[in-house]
Length: 448
Ligand SMILES: Cc1ncc(COP(=O)(O)O)c(C=O)c1O
Image (cartoon, rainbow, N blue to C red; front, side):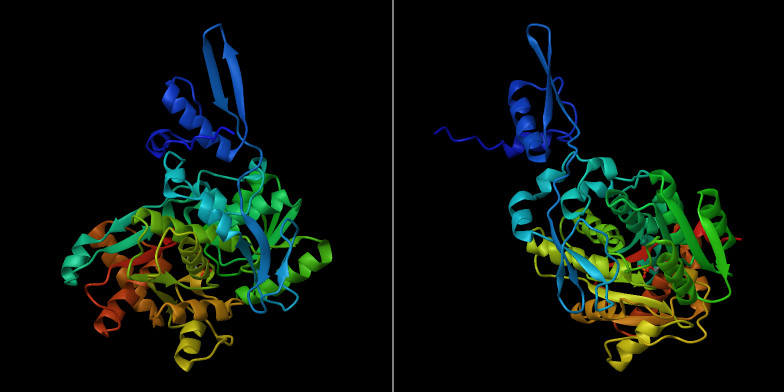
């Protein structure tokens, strides 16, 4: 039996997206192209004239995803994928699990070379099965912006970086989670999605639902930034203002979903937003050459991003792309709403509701998080901590970074800078430790 030749890696790396166009490739590069394409799906071969052959990679309808099952984050009970799920029967978030052994054999950094620089470049580690269901608004890989003046002022011996999520569609990182949640909803036949929101998530839900032709309804605290409400409405969502906080809004969303058969897309009440947020961790690792920073400062509300990144690092290790080293995960909250900080300090597993929550950082005004135990677990496993900062420190940090570095952070992003300063002053972190601060939305949304 003739053995099939493996594609020459050096040549394959030279080739752009294997789902692209092979016209003009010489014989050697063409065979590597075909091998790369064969791994992702079918090709179309068109003969042009007697001597020329044009071979075009056909967009494969099936995506090479490796989802094996869903798993209850509390009990470990398993559930089949490819059907609609909210919370597990234990009332806890479900996590998407992949066949990591198969992924380890299939996935390599070379596979990413030449792919588009958006979150779908990690498609093998994402759950969408059919290309036609991808709902995309042009998500970009967000830059790591260095803060050289502040590094100097603080006497740092390692880079201080901001992952600037403001560049995503709808101006916030909520685009990542909702791109995945809406794509999966489309794949699973959902007609209407609903959620509570402090602003950015609702705006992203509205945008991606409009794109997918799915209905959207959002409940927001009455003092949600007006710009977010306008965004949601302009993008076709029905918006209800509620005299209460986000958990009050969540109850109204749940009741409406039960009554009208809508799909509840609340934070961690469906399994796919976390998969979208996970791409922050995948991206971070790839951007830093498959190494991770020493410290990650994350503005924590519902905690999807923090939990998602922690999941990403575990998956990357399991498939052999990174080693065992992990960043210390630092959950940043506002002093006026710090349930996770209180639970961290008390050493408990769950974070009871924070009464009378108040802060200028609307995105992290979450009095109770359903994934509290997952946030606390990730923070503790990583050797990190949870830290609260006052609103005055948040606004001071925003002004300082804007003036000295030309980067206008959102209040939640500014909270991470304020927390960084405080942690440094208190000796909880070192000047030689590299750090990434997450700026999760555009500062422009908060100027009115
Ligand atoms: C700008 C911003 N930062 C941080 C958060 C908190 O994100 P997570 O739910 O992942 O904790 C939000 C959530 O609304 C937000 O809008």
